[in-house]
Image (cartoon, rainbow, N blue to C red):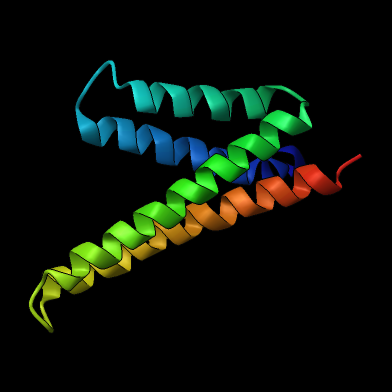
Length: 112
C-alpha cells in the first residue's frame, strides 16, 4: 500500500496522459506516446535525471494548459455555465497535474 502511495503522483500523471490520448481519438498520437514513455521511464527507473526531467516537462505543460483554459474561458459570455464548467474542471485537472509533477520532482531531488 505504501509503495502505491509513493507512486501516486506518477500514477496520476499516467492517468492524465491516457485520458489525453483517449480524448484525441488518434491511435498513433506522437505527443501522447512520448509523454507515456517519459512517465513510464520515471516509474520503472531509479534515475533522478529522468524523474526530474519528466516532472519539469509535466509542470510546464500544466502551466501552459492552464493558460489555455483561462484564455478559452475569456471567450465565453460572463456568467455562462459552460464557461464556468470549463474553468472549474480544467483548473482542477491542470492544477492536480502541476502539483503531482512538482511533488514528483521534489521527491526525486531530496531522495538519496
